[in-house]
Image (cartoon, rainbow, N blue to C red; front, side, top):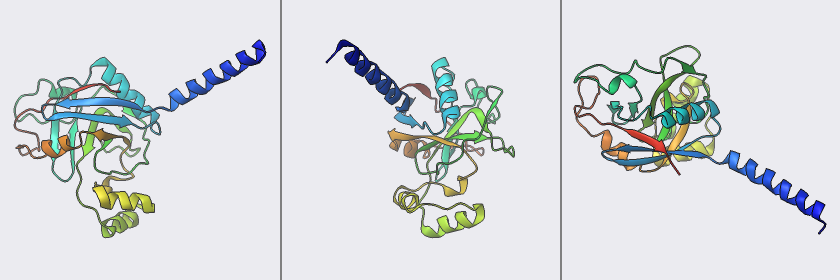
Length: 214
């Protein structure tokens, strides 16, 4: 093979490998006293992915609390006010001072990572607060009801997955799902079982650390 042709092949290969690398998913590890959760972030929600990764790299989430825990629903964290919160202090209003444009699409299967909102009509997400879905058993009747109420249509694959692993479909089409737990799903099951106060805040603080994953 001529030298010029070889260089062309090598150049094309480098472009291909660079393109493949851009398509690879990013991962983070959420660590708690109950164990670690490996979370894959979706490339289909780049604004949320990049914002979350930026906050993780800053160490923003380290020592914050899972401040709202509801069995059959979700566990929520990411409020910076929780870092030094006093017992019984109400949490859930803090953040970095900005919103993220909505990137709504993925359903709320058990174990997905989604962004909290403040109820704004644009459905824009809170800058740092997130939740992991615990969920509950889902059947066709529930999915039919959500479809009718929200004007969405689940694919056969989505219906099958909801019925297999559970989740919380009433949240669909209102909040941005931007990742999913791929290892350590049992940690969510353990956290939802802790004792809570009247605001669904764990009586004993459950702190998190989030680092870049594999």
